[in-house]
Amino acid sequence: MFYSKKFKKFKNVNHCFFSRKGGFSKGIYYGLNCGKGSRDNKKTINKNLYLVSKKMKLNQNKLLLMRQTHSNKVIIINKKNKKSKKFISDALVTKMKDFGLGVVTADCVPIILYDIKNQIIGCIHAGWKGASAGIIENTIKKFKKLNSNNKIIASIGPCIGKKSYEVDLNFYKKFILKSKKNAIYFSKKNMNKRLFNLRKYVNDKLIKLNVKVDHVNHDTFREDNRFFSYRRSQKLNEKDYGRCISVISLVG
Image 1 (spheres, rainbow, N blue to C red):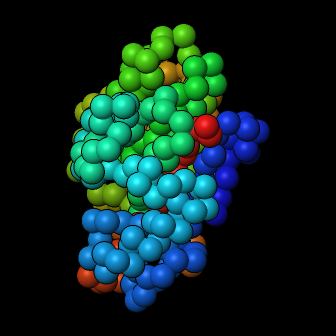
Image 2 (image 1 turned 135 degrees about the horizontal axis):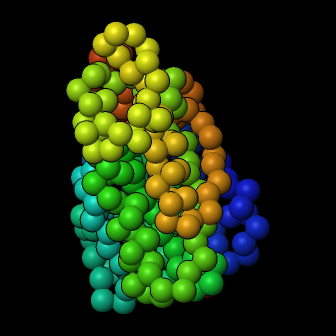
């Protein structure tokens, strides 16, 4: 369990970036696999999510998760949709108390957000695709829709580190075509490979939107005993992979 130093200071917000430690899953999912999209035993995943709810002091049916699709879609949770069983999005925002907003990741970036002035919280699933498509900008727009006079802080959780994120030249060119300025997020590994700094890419988007940022800086690929990693599971030729969960809630 990892925490943001900034968020720890606020009495009315609970949060946690959970590692894979603890939990009931076995085999390649060993530990606290919270990925409903994984092929792990569904009952086991639910037991893991119950454990997370307990740690967050939440009723389990108030721990809200998304069906994440690497999109730029954001959903505001309110009285009308709070009982919905499926949020197909990559970010959630709410003013409602005692609801946990959860994001599951296995190399992508989990981001939690808090608007200090207006008591609004949010969480974002930011892989390169969603970040590039505007998931971060769209989430801040939703905060502003609820109240335009904001003071938002964000914490960027454990994700794949730059030294672990090897990409091909096509990937690199895609980003450079979008903007030449994106070159700062890459360094050369060899003739055919670049290293991509996803954390910095996401960080700079938040800063540009006047969001204050802190980091829980861990590399999910390298720290195999602490985190699940999609990329590591691919390298090991595993059939599937677990997901870690990050949660934020407003305390009632």
